[in-house]
Amino acid sequence: MPDRQLLHIVIGGELKDIGATEFRDLSKVELVGAYPSYAEAHKAWKARAQATVDNALMRYFIIHAHKLLDPSEEEHSH
Image 1 (cartoon, rainbow, N blue to C red):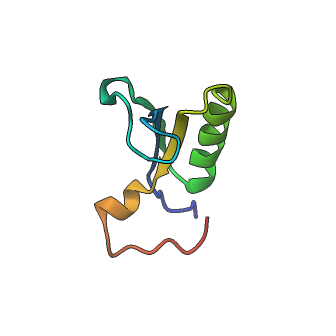
Image 2 (cartoon, helix red, strand yellow):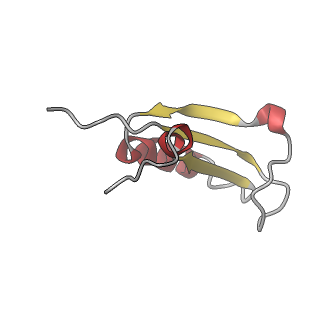
C-alpha cells in the first residue's frame, strides 16, 4: 500500500531583512512546486537553496500544506 499523500509546498524569494521571514516583493515569490511528502519537498528545497546560496537574502521554505487543509492531522514522521 503506498504512503498517504501529505501535501508540501516549497516557495522562496528575497527577504526584506536577513533576520525576518517577510518577502521583499510578493510578486516575485517563486512557487517551486507541490510535493507528496516532506522528503520530496526537502529535496526541492535543498536544490533551490543551494542554487541561490550567493544571495544572503534569498530563502526557501517548506509549507506543510496538508496541515493547513486538515489542522487536526498529525504527521507521524518525515
